[in-house]
Length: 606
Image 1: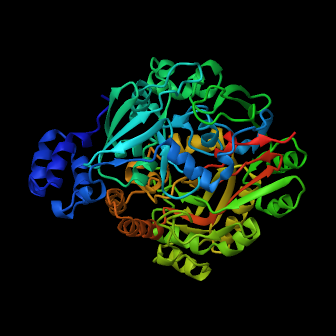
Image 2: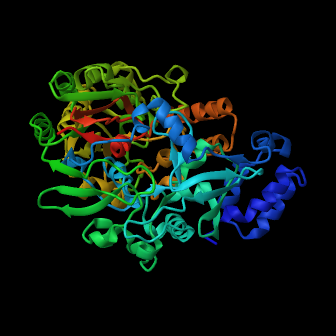
Image 3: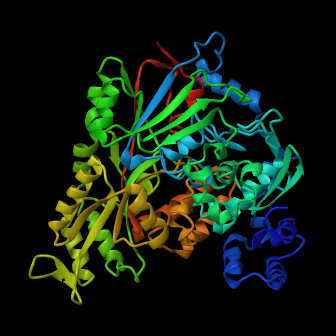
């Protein structure tokens, strides 16, 4: 049996309530004697409806249980949308594909528990696999991973995963439920240090090994499949490699840093070969023994370059084959270049900046008027036109374009460019112009650092923000830093920053942004801002247990309006995905679901 969090103790009790056997008062009277904290009980109060009749009608959604699509059905769906995935006979094998990136977007780990940025996650998930995942072609379908299929019990909370019996680790050991058991235990343990722990524990209450190829997983509540799988990052690592290593040492282990290739053992279509720090390369070889579609190419190389200019010139010169997110100013010219194609698609991407709301770090942003004023002061339309050349749109609300809760027309407070309103808000909050032109209050100047990962487009973005804020008496100081060694520790360990500027990719359409804005996500998720709103937390709990898609969407829109109005961050614009690549890569097809999913089907022209 895996680690149990407090919610699982209430599972049987809750099912009695759902069945109408006890009322809400009895539920909490009996729950209070289980030794749970007051905070846990208060959160349960948000999630539990007034009566059993108000609860989600599980039996209407899972009558007799549910069985997912299996591997053959998933392949058929993929082949219908992407015919080349079914045409594997006579493929030209061999060749190398080289993926180029800048030093500011480096490979930060080779362990999937710690892969939480691009390109790291996309590359690492070519080596390691989840039990199941979101269909790469868009939509909300869940497709097999290491599990050939899964079942959901009639009560809507027990998921049974049936592992592929031919799956094996890169060193030849079979994949078993024991590997899943260890992987889940590490994900659930805060000492592991993964960004996914909070959402994992809010989603998964317990798990148990049934046999070598079967594992039962009990959810904390009834959830829509999309919500469950998006929030439970069920990636699997080998127990025979990691079982003897304390969880708190996993992140620094040579098997996670890549310094010991013999310990980088996955089950996916590509094997780790080596990491050459002096040359800035990471090399991955075809897994000849892969149980699913064996890649045609021999090797994938990830190569870092000093900056955007260098990586674009490398693509033009044929030194690399793939560049994710080329500078918008280069896209039109690249697409017109012989031998280069550019894929452009709607995405889950958005650019944003966040305020540090911890008063022990800075008191500059405690007033919501200040946060709102800084947004009103930005002419985001002109920034989109000049920085993104039509490859983005101004954001009204925090949900990206492909989210099921994307509803800019429903945003209650629209932050239009209005410097006069910005000045009015600042003066309402007591910030008046000082002798040097910078506003001040109680002897403190409205001056702060804008920290961001060093990159040319980020430099331009920060400089534009600086100019717009200077016009209303605010001093923003662009501060480019190394992403890996400075920015990541500032956001996950020390929290020493005033304002941070980033881009984000949710990778799923389910609309749950609690990893970024949930109270529990501070220190264990992506809520470096230390934002907290109990009503937001309550709405996400309600949305995640709501099986009716339209009703869930309404709850998410309400939650998004709260975040938008309180402005712990400013979502600047929604970005289109863009990948430039050499046309010698046949069948290379990046999508919002995954930029690199099609590498198993790619062939390389000589």
